Amino acid sequence: MTTAIPEILAPAGSLDKLKVAILYGAHAVYVGGQKFGLRTAAENFTLDELREGVAFAHERNAKVYVVLNSFLHDKDLEELPDFVSFLDEIKVDAVIVSDLGVVKTVRQLSNIHIHISTQASTLNVEAAKLWKKMGATRIVLGREVSVKEAGKIKREADVEIEMFIHGSMCMAYSGHCVISNFTQGRDSNRGGCAHSCRFEYSLDMGLDTEEKKKAFFMSSKDLEGLRVLPEFINEGIDSLKIEGRMKSHLYAGTMSKIYSEALEYYSQHGNFLSENLLEWEAELKKVSHRAYTEASLVDKAGADSIFNEREVSNDSEWQMVGAVVEASPKTGIILEVRNAFNQGDELEFIPFRGKAIKVQANEIMDIAMRSVQRTRPSTLARLPYVEGIGPYHLIRQKGRK
Ligand code: SF4
Image 1: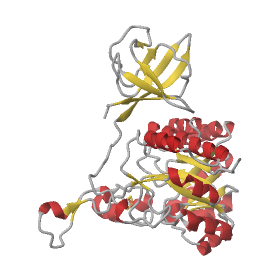
Image 2 (image 1 turned 60 degrees about the horizontal axis):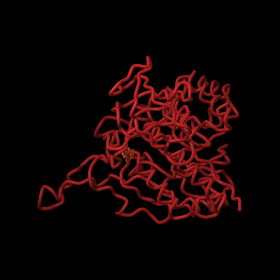
Image 3 (image 1 turned 90 degrees about the vertical axis):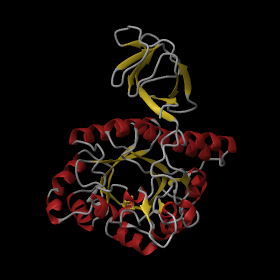
Image 4 (image 1 turned 30 degrees about the vertical axis):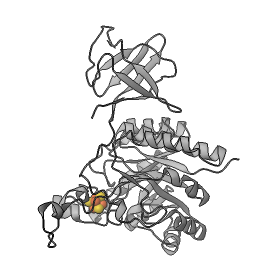
């Protein structure tokens, strides 16, 4: 049995992460330029990096969407035309937009597809129809919509639908919140959100002890929709988005790999085996995350979607130690070290498909072939060659918080 599968859309906070996500199976990535996006703290792409990223993606049949989803004042809007013309020239596949002024500018100056950002909080058929009439080719629905509701919107508005399947959640209707503005002076609707909802707050409502007064009232668990994949497919959802342009290479690679692998499996077999689901879920837990929730994908999110334990969770004991630069029987494995490891440590190399390859680092050399006991961050190291390991494979290690 073969079923059409939605696109897996991964976050790419840098050119390196774009390559990692695509090589690990993402069908599309979303990226930000230096301006107009909602992640001012992300590394973001220069014009040259955007050009290179689009070429890299297109050579591998993947797509690149550029976020222009900040809300702009007139002064900001004046600077947009040059950037839109550039994006048109390098043939980006779409822009992600929430401001009507930006929609109009993009339509006037280019034929670039317009995806309406989740920031616009589209929750119903009529809103989707209106966006389509204004030139949108895709709507990224608000995270408050269930998969069933999304299927209805898709059928009745006849427009491409994108939904979030994984990542951090916003306690407000995506971004329509000013806690960050008031507490940190950082505007959540203009790329500055400080995630203030995840901080600990006191509540003075007559509670009797200090302990009871303090809690993470507004801190959401992270979204994880692996077991909802069949419903996304059945409802004809076009694109499944992974949140997290500010997150790590390990996150971009792991999420792209697991969700695309699971989708491929389901499209070929029409079901999941519980042992596969358990294996994929274990992999999703090997990156930094809070407790997971399906949020509103099936039923409305309730009290159990609040992460009321601590401000930041790094439940994973795993940490990325580096990435492979080159690997052959002649050169051995040359890797770029991000976090130091020692002789004798057990490393896991993550191939683009299939299970991680365990390697005991008994023999480490530096690039000049001198034996070393402990590697150093931001240097190259060499290990003996192991079959199945190749360039861009990420390497992780347990017990390295
Ligand atoms: S502070 Fe929290 S609720 Fe507010 S915009 Fe940021 S993530 Fe969303």
